[in-house]
Image (cartoon, rainbow, N blue to C red; front, side, top):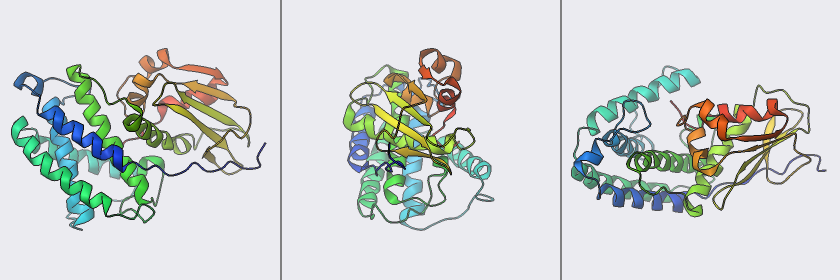
Length: 281
């Protein structure tokens, strides 16, 4: 057994993000007026609102991160203040862009994502991101992690639209695996208050070609994700691929998820996976 885990490596998410946006533009071109007003799993948001949110966040990132125009900030850097601030900006954006037609929004989206992709390609993946990935507990993040976070945002909101309209999901490995790999980076932060002796290991498994095994390992100081098995697992949590993305985005009730999740070994170490949230808000 190794004395310490080998750290898990970076995620190269940009190709998946570009393809995800290409699928979004393709999807928007097929929507009928009835589709546009279909309710989604997001409370009070219809398809039009989620599409408007995706436009808003792309424009917001270009304004703030690329152009350096920051007109307001959260009251503080606390998780609660950041969440309140982001929730308000999201609500304001949905109010404005949710009023647009599918045709107008698609035209604006095409221009926005083209600019967004150019900007993201210009970044040094290992350079410092302007904003840390707060849901992972980071105070500072590299650009590669921020780009991966952007992929999960654009992927899971599009997936919500596809779920609402009973359209095929973006579940193939080149798109879904990097999304899952990003979501699972929340585990050390989600487990920060979960007690366990040094050497304890929790395996989180998402079956299928797009899934994998993520190993959470307890060192003397904290929980960490390990690239390889360090020892025998104390708990093994299996999450079906079709609900895994919903577990980490508050897209399924905990009781409904628990009914389909399998836990082997120490249940007290396994259940906290279902409380991990890899989004802000």
